[in-house]
Amino acid sequence: MNCILDATFNRERSRREVKNKLALDSSQLQIVECVCPEDVVLAILRARKGDYSDADVSVYKKMEKIYELGREGHITADTTKPSKNNAKEIADTILLG
Image (cartoon, rainbow, N blue to C red; front, side, top):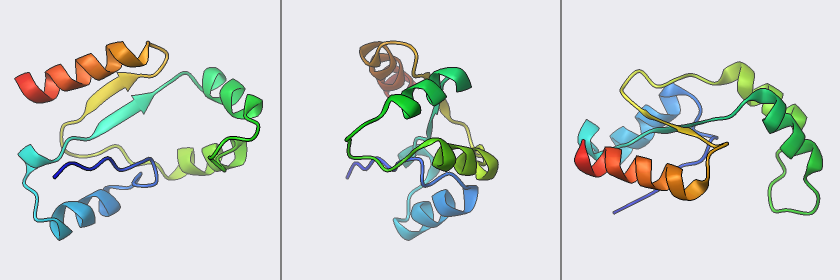
């Protein structure tokens, strides 16, 4: 089974609950932290019109205040890089350890 959880799982507790509920060990759960300079994030959010997400600058600011980096190891993806590059780096990290 594969599953991708979005940024609403931004607290250690919520990630741990999912891990426990699905009885996953550490090798079965990969956390990918997506990072981007704040000025880029804000520009993207301000330019959004008519997409599926309701996230805006106020949501970003709220999430930024409550975000908790995972205690276990995680993969960092720089979202200013092309998606294809990030996907390859993430897959390589997961598959090759």
